[in-house]
Image 1 (spheres, helix red, strand yellow):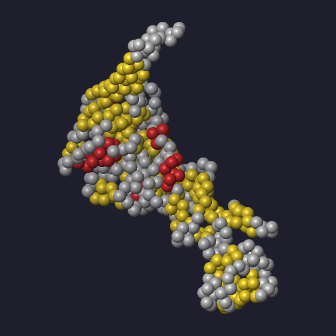
Image 2: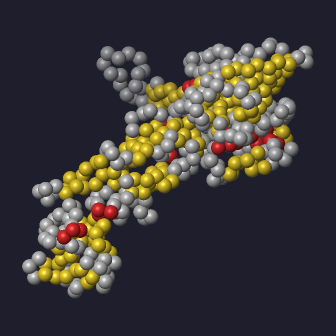
Image 3: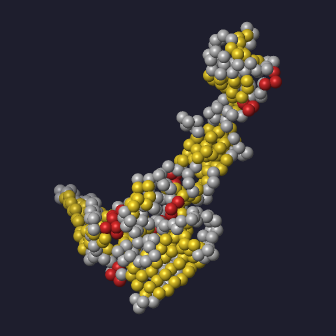
Amino acid sequence: MLHITQSPTPLSSAYGPNETVVASDLSPTSQDPTDVVAVISIFYDDVYGLVAFVGGGAVQPWMRPGQPFTLEGTENGLYDGEWTVTDDPVGGSVQFNGENLGPAIGGTMRRVYRNYVVIAEVTMNGRPPVKYRLLPGSDGFFHLDVSDLAKRTFLDVFDLCDDSAGLLALFSAEGYITQRYTIRFTEGYDVLQDDGTWVFTWFNKGFEVTSQPKAIVNSVREYHHDNEYTEAVDRTWNEDLTPFGVMQLPNTRRWLTHNPGQGGTAVDMDTAQRASLTDPCWIAFLYWGKWHMPWIRVQWWTQGGGTGMANHQITLTGTESSWILNASAAALALPDTTERWCVSMWNPAQDVQYLERIWFVRDDRCETGTRFYALNELGAVDQYTVDGKVSRTNSVDRTQMAKLNRKRKPSIAGDHDRRIWKVDLSKYYSASTRTERKWTARWLMDAILSSVDVRLRKMPDGEQFTPVLIESSEFDAGENSSRFALEWRLGVDETRQRR
């Protein structure tokens, strides 16, 4: 039998330990009662050689020539160790190999399963299972960490960010932000055949144990994270992602962003996300529960002092662990006079709040600004608009080689192959952010400027996003407020020509 003794939490980071530990009743020492036989005595017989006498009624079918076993707790201790049966038992006497170390009484004879392994089949997001052969560790248990498999198979979350999807564009992010998985454990070992040979046999049916479904999140496991707004540590290195998992009640959970503009019941103009009415504002959340139909609650305030609220019912199937939605004013069909708005999630039956409010403020300067989108530490998307004027610089590295004495090839006109030009062209863009308060400036440094994947929207080639290489490498946020001078180039602007 196999037993799962340790497993990750339902929502855990792909960049931390995600170890499942299994114990076996057969290895490294068998606990099966039929595999453990009490030894009455050990002696040397002139005919049969070295013999362990267990009594006729204690002989087991596995005591066959070639079968390894261990002796434990013999009287003189000299026979403690691993041995091999050399012949079929006779009248309760089991013959085994070894040197005659004198007579002994007592002890235990225990079967050894040769070449024993635990076979783990990891099924992640419905893809074909990936198999692992596990050997026992120094502690006698079998360990499997699925972090590496998950990190190699996450899809690109930007592929979900389609702002043309219409009202309340909500997408399952399973496979992009999270990956649900189960692990099926079975066992295999060498089986002794009638002709004395060993054949490895996988016991695929009837002896398995399967882990409960888990979800692994494309989230960096930071040593700790400070909430710059409250100046408190809001996540430490050894914490799981429960504070972000909707339905892990009773507390209200958080959106998948460290943006300081969430949580409050009133807007803070210094921390709310700025956007024009049409700028996409992607926010995501984790979900761990059964089929459910909560509300996405949208509240807004207009320039004339009016207010409004709308509850949009959504369906969470319970088989997807993450979701992403566009919270822009256009996607939420807000009035053209909207000045600010917030988005949260509620249980319509008990009017219980599931997700904190996240705030947005209209800023028409964002319409002409450069809006960056970045993969954040939690596996979702953050966005920020630099509304300063953009300058552009070209960097050209040009080389020429001439072979003027080289004759032209027959039938080829022109100077082909007599002169060669090589040009490397890079286009650099630069702009400055506006002055930001300390908490927003530090979030900007961590979430956008330090991200491994930064992009811009809809370049002329028709792609939804274009990668950005931020050339600026050092950022300094003061105690009160800061602004940053940024320089970047586009991943598609690297032009190399050779003629």
